Image (cartoon, rainbow, N blue to C red; front, side, top):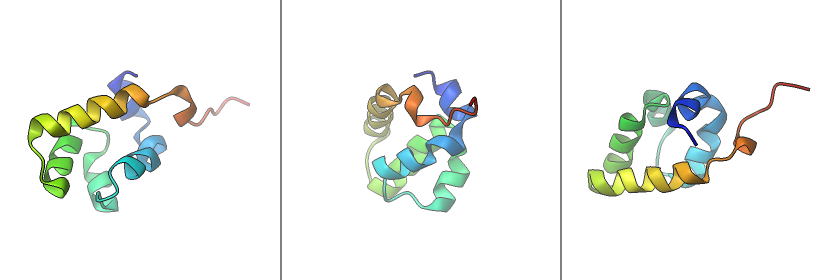
Length: 75
């Protein structure tokens, strides 16, 4: 999945972000606002992991993102 799409539809994927990284607070999610670097920083902060590990977690999660995660407004 393209990160630009994730960023553009951040509110639609926040539930999946919370499932993956349950230690992130609602405020953390709001601060991240779809920015990958901010997400990595918050993962580092909340989980006490190195930047490389946070980036690997995000890359793994990003590969699992599917079109089903996005609400289809077309009916």
